[in-house]
Image (cartoon, rainbow, N blue to C red):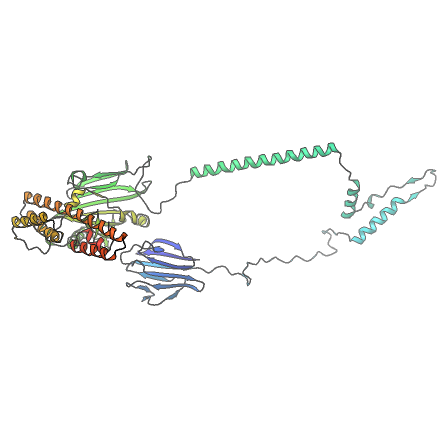
Length: 531
């Protein structure tokens, strides 16, 4: 039997058994051994189980460490060997030999030799007479029965009864005597025997039926008393009516119903607590279908004009540094690449996994970061380290945020390359001309002008200018959506006609129009994955 054990920071997070064949370990969802560490490749390691043993082969450019050295060739593994993937993850192999078998492949059973026969003079042993002795006894008995004698003074001839000790002791003689005594049963006796046999059969059948009913009753009772199996991957808690238990809270901007966004969280009666402070919301609740696992959601928001002149990752790093300054017991992974929430232009976000010590417990979680204008937000979701294996997918895939379409259409961020001082009236006049012409090739320039105008409105604290620029930005985004959908239709029509030239022409045109990496369509087009 061959088993693998996954350790992260010397704590076991998963284990399993390797069957014969090839097994891929990595972050890819198609991997046989799914790993989640950010410094592990999608297909990082191959474990090949053959008749000659277990062989390991590195598949990643990040490398795999074995016995302090890089694993650069296919190598056979032994029991207890450890493979290091990334900075914190270790793969331990447990290889146990099967039980030995005989040359013909079957397990042999050894039967002990019989003990030696007892001595003839052992008084405690019963001796069985030989067949010859039995025959002699039978003949002598018959002779004795045929003999008659005449007493001296008696005138009648009488037959002498056989002596008491002349009764045959051989089992064969007794059997012959029983056979001689058998006779044919009458019809009445046969009927009685049939009825008795029928009653016995009916009784047995009745007993079997009762036994089956009893067994079913026991199984039903055990099933009703059996506790529900543990969830492999924890999910949103569900109430007795089958609906998910959840609620929303307003972080101070009016919520998603007012055109902004709200915090979403599992809401369990008696187990959920929401604490709001300036710039910080802490939600203590539980998750899992039976709401048995602790979950903590922390929302932090900061506002600074200085955020406008920094790129997204710089702002996120500065806020993480503030967290570590307040609490030194943090262990942060690498900041992820940009990803998007929502559709159309989407909301660009960053994330980072972490582990920290708080309240005398070890917590594992993920921080989600996004910003709009001069405001930056971090949403932390964490659970106990002991529940990381079951809760990681839930924490990573649920944003715990609900955005309105109006907020996503009006989303904007600062431009680090803008030096300031431009005339906002001139910029807005040029924006109006571009939108009036509805020229897709000028949309990148249009967005840049609106971005600079919005930065000036924040720095000059001019709400009217900001509202005017946001109105023009939403108008631009609406035009982009209509044009993008029309191009998508043309692309699929060309695909149906198998017109590769037209397909490529539409795709390249869209790539030129959507040239900003702050737009979700920039990435979907370059991956050729149309929404």
